Structure formats: structure tokens, C-alpha cells
Amino acid sequence: MVIFPAIDLLGGRCVRLVQGDYDRSTVYDDDPLAPAKTFVDQGADWLHVVDLDGARSGTPVNTEVIRAIVVETGARIQVGGGVRSLEHAQRLLDCGVERVIVGSALVRGAIPPEAWFDALGDRLVAGLDARDGQVAIEGWLEGTGLGVVAFAQELAARGAKRVIYTDIAVDGSLAGPSLASTRALAEALAIPLIASGGVSCLDDLRRLALLGVEGAIVGKALYEGRFTLAEALADQTIVQPR
Image 1 (cartoon, helix red, strand yellow):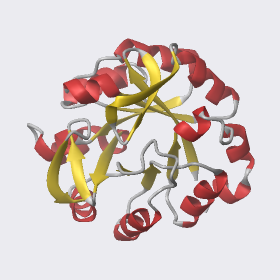
Image 2: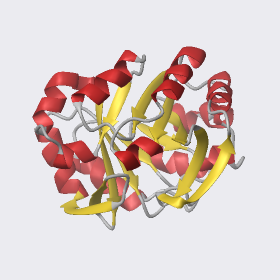
Image 3: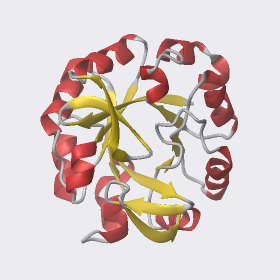
Image 4: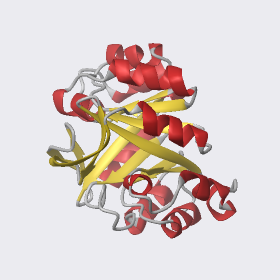
């Protein structure tokens, strides 16, 4: 299982939100490059970067910060937040980003999901953020009424190559991941699934690994010192290839 350390950008700083609430943010570093370099020094191959300003505004905002992270770390980076058009996606890819994450635009975008998948292939990840089992969009601020499992299956049928699933209720809470809903989604999909939200300890990562997910995104637990990335990567029950 791949561990993706998370770097969430708000106002150019590295922060974490609780349940996607912009009014409940904690600043962990004024310079996002610092944690990015620390994670890479500890062995990270990938970084998961979210432009929270972009998610709220509907257009990428922290592009230059993201470019700096790419250049300074040399890590493979997947980026989400505010990617609402193919032009936005290409702008990030031109910065050296490996993959872009698209959520809202797959629900209410100007072009159908097939156009995204045809244009970007496996460089696009479908981001599915759910509240009470239903997909939420626009920086998690709006509900859609779409069931997350059914919608994930629809996107896979229309060409999605990979999905990131976040249960908003546990994101940033250190309450543990939503294992039941993650298992249901993993069993319903024949494409790789990356789990996000709630990881608080190494045991949480071990439990996710047993579900067969491709990867897990970890943020607050690392920033709060619950464990280090190096410790997670050294644990063969977590990272050993399936």
C-alpha cells in the first residue's frame, strides 16, 4: 500500500481542516516546502497536495507553491482542489505534477466525464468526497444526492482509472478511517482505490491495507506526531506489495 503524505494549502500555508470546515483550520507550517521536504527525506515517493483556496473558489490558486514543491522535492505529486476544466488540469501537469484529482467537474462540469478520462487517462484521478454516503462537491460545501458507490461505479464504467475516496465525517478528526464504507467501495470497484480521512495510528493503516486499497492519504496524524512516515514505511504489514 502506498502512503501519501498530505499537504493542504490555504493562503499559501500548510494547514489541516476538520471535516472540510474552513473555519476549523490549523496552520502547521507557513512554508509548505518544509513538510514536503521532510516527508521526502523520510522516504515518500508521492505527495498528496490539495489547493483548498482553489477548491473553494473553483480555480487553482496556489499553482506557484505547487510548482515549487515539485521542483524542490523531486517527488511524484498528485494535486486536487479547484480543477474544473481541462485547461486547469493541463496547467498543473505543465508544472510537473504527476496526477490531477477532479471531483466537482465530474458531477457538474461543462464536459462529460468521458472527455476528462479520454484526455488525461491515468493522469486523472476521480475524487469522491462523501457525507452520509452521498457525494459532496464545491470544496465539500454542496451535496449532490448521488450515492458514492453507485457514482463511483458509473465513473469506472465511463473510463475512470483510479478513485480517491474521502469520508468527510472523519477527515481531520483522528477518529479512524471509515472502514465499512471503504470496504464497500473497494469491493464494488475493479479499479484502484485510494482511501483518505481519519487515519490516526499505524493500526489504522494496517486495517486499510487489509482491505486491498492501493493507497492511503495521511495528514493530521503525521503533523500531530502520532507516528512518522518513516515508521509507516518500515512496517511491512502496511507497505508490502499485495
